[in-house]
Image 1: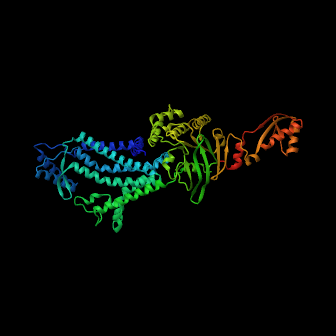
Image 2: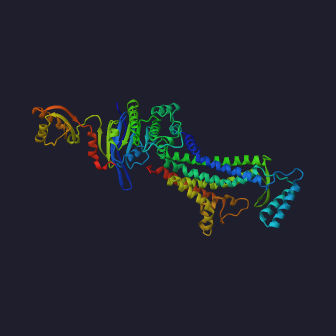
Length: 317
Length: 310
């Protein structure tokens, strides 16, 4: 029995020893740092509200926002909601926190799609590259079942996604802390939830924002992994997975009139449609329905990957 | 003292409707170097792939130390080290990183063992360089190191001399002989070039169109039927050559020619003694008789057909 951890360790090492992986990380770091610099140099944010003067500062802000709306007719919806939030603080006598590291982390939740893209790239290569390099032959003539070899690769993909996500969150927080400060270790703020304005924990919001995006990441990574295992080609796997990731919503919209459209994977990957008073994409869909659909897709992807990989005759190219 | 290390039992492979391997039956003993010879496309690599479980066996079986690769894969493959086709490694890792990678896949390989294997193939100086920068010879040696890590009973090398220079070929030949005699490993070497493996193998199995057409010991002269009928090249230094040529024509119906002081002709080996006797009886002095060494090669071409060599 070979320690499964050692196999996974092998796979992770192979991912991180390649320079191309570090290029991805550098790209992510550049975006996070660049985003921080951009935010701090344009004065759209307030760093801190004075202990005694915060109410006046908020009212001042409101006047500025109103003026902007009336004179330039810009950002009407956005500014209205900002004014409402400011009023909520004043009415409830809560001194708002300035823009800080936590908020920066929360805003960077959109970068999870970049993490998804990177994970797709890794998942697409992790099986196909072994065939391309010819090393698959050396990998498979060991006293280890093919089932386990493939599993170690899948686990390595998930670990990569996890590490990259941690990298995104931690670097965002550090960059945020440097540029905007930390303010508090249990920050709260008023947010426009779909039931109206609420005073909520920012950390809880961060977990929700990132967590819901992970569903899509996980499904697309599994999909790319399957294509990689079946077609032994990472370009095909990257191409199809990225295309589907980008076109997913349009595909659902295109078929929205048909009753079967709710069975499309992408109609179910965004689980935020079930929380906070949101409307489901297609009438009649429920959270448990979506989870069932996701599980079925996942099982199909996994069976196809393992089925093909375990049966395949490994011959030359 | 030699026990069976690997045994092929009626091994067959069918891809689609085409039968690629048509029932191979032979065994390889411990401490023996077995040459697996055949023209390109004869089914050597397919057979090797089935030996190590990379390809499914359609019919028959491969047993390694009595363990079936079909039903007892893990234990059977534990005894095998192999290079299949080219010695491909991860180009972005160093030689040592590659060896560590494969060592982690089999339990019980110590750091000392890894160093031992590196020393055996003589890669101490290059082991911390990236494999992408290795020459083909170095990659071949790293491939052998990888195959030897877990002290296998059977070592399979697919075309190990491909792309090597003469010095490299000689070196590999020496490792292989050493492994067989000192560590009692059964070594299987495939090749399409007889001249390369003739020198390092104890036995040679010749495969053509998925069938084993002959198994031949390299050193012992066997008196098989084929052998008896096979013509060999004979050169003789005789005096006077003219009457010798006439005698060959009249007594043995052989066409001989006189070239650079030697009488040359072809005949079955069996007839040589009687030819010499006749010469002596007829007062012809025989100074020297030379039988061409290329016997095996002739046989090889005879068996597979000269044109099919690729």
